[in-house]
View 1 (tube, one colour):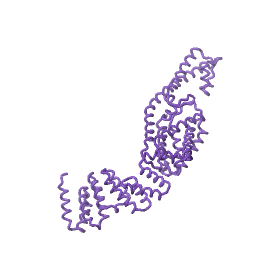
View 2 (cartoon, helix red, strand yellow):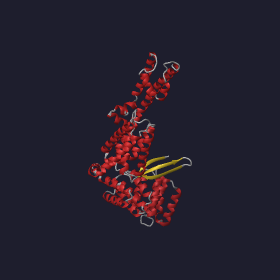
View 3 (tube, rainbow, N blue to C red):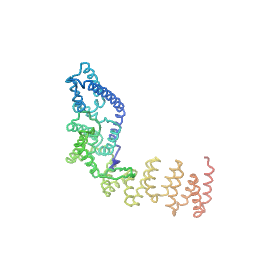
View 4 (cartoon, helix red, strand yellow):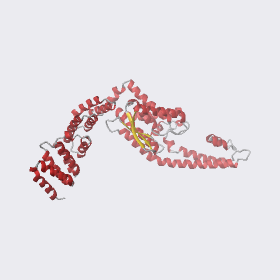
Length: 476
């Protein structure tokens, strides 16, 4: 089994429209699904009642001269029922009236079905239903599959085109996909589902981000294998499109899947992007419109991420460094710079960014969670402790102490001592470490720290004892 799990292309802001569309589709299904189950039960009961009556008529009239050829009914039920309805066979008046009552009951159940009311039926064109059908789904499997693909590609197109334009494009893609499906496949039933609209977004993504990678999860049960690997979006989405074309020609007559809607939506989305690119509409209209709703640093950050995803590390670094100089407290830019430097064995530059970002963050925010998170994810995880000053270590240690995380306080101060062992701050770091170790009840390491203090700084032995004594007598 193969599942797409994520795209490497990043976005600059929260994908409000994409998330809202996903939420709305779930809400609609939660409301309509119980009604669908009720309607299906009503239809099935009416159909069984009619079929049972028709079988009785077949047996009753089997040996009569005016026998109704119900074998034809088995081969073409609707055609045969139309003949019965027109009284082309020898049913008595009472039999025909009873059949007509049961037949009308089935028709009423079909017409009152919520899928019929909100889905798009090509033979009964209704523009409003073209839109409502996009938000209807036959079940949770149908919905989850569609929404997962919308999440994978929708966030990026919304980010690049802006929320209003993306929403309009999504709806128009769904309408175009439904119309193309209706013209080519000419279905007799009602069309529901967001797959046509989502296919339009996939087509746009395939052209705009053909060099970006989509990561897939491969699962094989016997023997158990779990692998993740990337494929260029231009390759995997093009393959999906060609597969839909193949299935549309081969299986559309026998399947309930609207393959031609997928083909039409994808083609429409790809053509829209090609037209935009050909006439340079993105540079002239779309980008300025979107950029006006974003901070400059967010726009630049997105360009840096895009450059990095294309393998252009130098361009990404130039953009990120310029932005970092303007705002060293911007955590996401600092984290991206640190990640690039560490990935390219440039620990010195990474340490410089980490130190500057931590200090400016400290001035800008008092949120302990933010500061601790930055320390743990960027400094501790990447081994950048040697670039911090003793005061930086004291600050982080105090944050852990306030949260009564004394074990983590001890680890921070231990790192501080290790990296400042030969500095004038070493004895004072040791005193703080002894206090933290006593609070954390790490007796083994406490003894080692006291031994280190006696060996290197014997003049501070009494002060260390006083610290331990004060902690011991402090009310719990």
